Length: 358
Image (cartoon, rainbow, N blue to C red; front, side):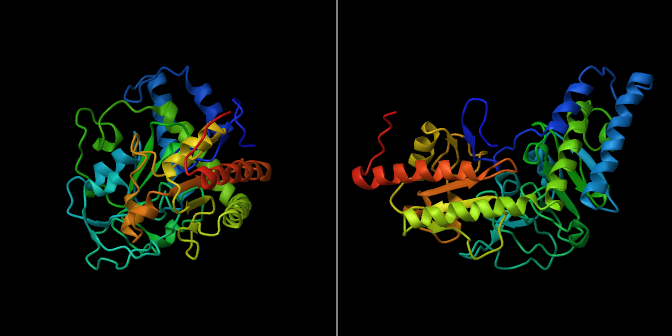
């Protein structure tokens, strides 16, 4: 279940997922391998074989036929590696690691969908939003897509989208932190930013961390199998249960994007008059890990710019709470959450402030 060893319940899977058992075993089994993949002796070749096998496995798991997989330290580096020298456009709902490199000029509708597709094919577009879970209609042949939140939770049909580039992060698919992937259909589209050695086909210098890479591939395989086996449909049922119960308790509560296609695990709920930051703190004290925005805005609990871009005023945007479930979430976890949330909401209504007496 989602009950952690310290008795807490983890409802922040979009920030970082729990390490799956296959990935953990891979990490442990490879830790004693000492080879540098750039060395030609036996130990070096062993390390190189792990990396190249992993590269092929990523292509197979994602259903991609042609292109190049480059291993990086994570999605932010992958985005920078591809986007840093290109004049691309995006919308304001993209992750900061995309917006930093793009012209943020494409409008967003109140339902969270991008209102237009750039005809010049110089657009970056996410498949799924981390805060609302809303899915975009990504066009075939898109120049660049952020698949971080979507892969391992839905069937992304990447073989049909045929993106020119996409990126992933290991710790979003039940793998270790510190490793990610950039896929490009044509490696000539990349101008390296990390220079030095000739690692990663000369596109990203630095000794490859084959231990993390192999563990990432194990996690990717595990997460994709969850999609194929219908596990996320069960999670969606629990998410719907949570949303319905919350709205029974608080009639004014808004579920952002409820009429749109969303990730099966994500709820962004707005309870007017009750600050999201206050909810996060109160629920944390009750043993629940939730958020009021993306984890990458560390220390910025009030930064809910995405909802403002969707047309929600400050008074509502500041009252949002994100709950993101995982494959280990059980009905009993949802029931415990609802029990605590109802008590906290009642306390908020009665006193207008949070009291944290335990």
